[in-house]
Length: 87
Image 1: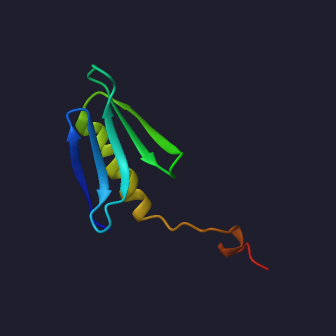
Image 2: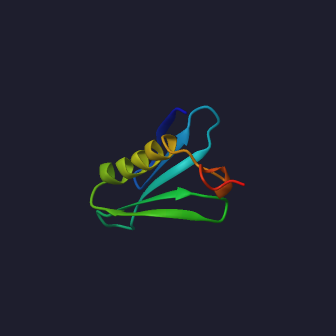
Image 3: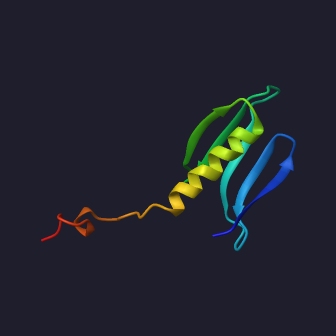
């Protein structure tokens, strides 16, 4: 899945899927500071905060690494699908 960054203003940037425009990450400046936050939306009402970073580039890298790891991870919805856990 191809993803890109979009700069909304000097305090917010979105990481989105270029195929459908779905936002999969956001970096934001903590009001009038040099600290940047990074978060991943999980649903319309939930998000996963990755942390606070000293520079914008570190926050963006955290989101990129999060999705890089997710892309390489096999997620199993039920434990019985794992080897040795079935009937």
